[in-house]
Image 1 (cartoon, helix red, strand yellow):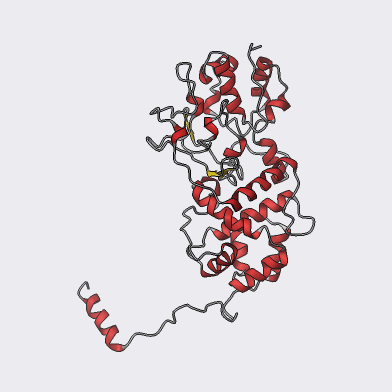
Image 2 (cartoon, rainbow, N blue to C red):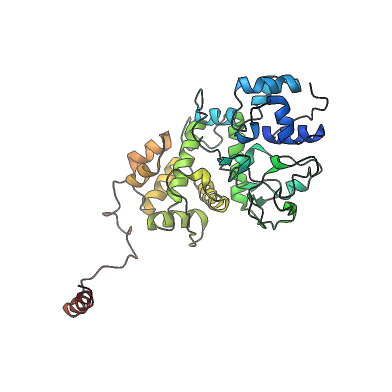
Length: 355
């Protein structure tokens, strides 16, 4: 059993605690991990998601803790709770968990950080920094970071060694990450993500838009709303709804596509959370009225959903098939007029030059 065993922080993720254990015992994470797992290269795995019992057993013996105590520091209990499933596939991506993209020990995504948190006397990494609905530090009111601004290397505290144990410095170029510029986070996003974090911890749906809504239903609705709003720069109906929710007519381009929410940039997710914070303050009747007024249709909801929830089912039942026959939905769109014969002939002359 190792001689020095730091007490895990309440919201600390497993890799962070292992790093602190290694440093406290005069080692580095890779060497310390090799002493526990022998040839099993723990730092090439995303064990913050889950550490299977056969791999958890050597660690339990080394630190004198139970498997359940080790598992509680991973993301597995949270994701099982919000998805309401009995098991998760370790070989596929998990909803709401930002993937790490590991190659050897280098990572290309995953763990974000708050520069102000790294300034604290005993810095550590939080579970929330791997969850895609968390885009800001609630304590310091700033948007999270992912990379070193100097060399663009992803935050990699697991690469510290016994000569340089400071997780607040970039492990590639040595830049002090604590000196990064802070971008103020939106208060609506901070409040909303903290309510979601509380729900994930307790299993209670703290935003019951629909009567008797479960936590699984709440997160399914959130995912649908985020997918719907990610097309705000391209869809006038969504723009009208967002204007009502946020009081602004500025619509930034959100670049992620498909079901890739977990790989979207933190600033894009932050903006989506602002819009969803407005939606989740409303009840289902007010949401329906807003979507009717804006011109959001049943097809748009159906395309945005990834799983069912009572809210999604209600919207699919109550929204119109399309907005073509609704008064005012297409107001402001420029009417397409046919071109004159002279204009057509001029265009054809241009085309004939290439025939």
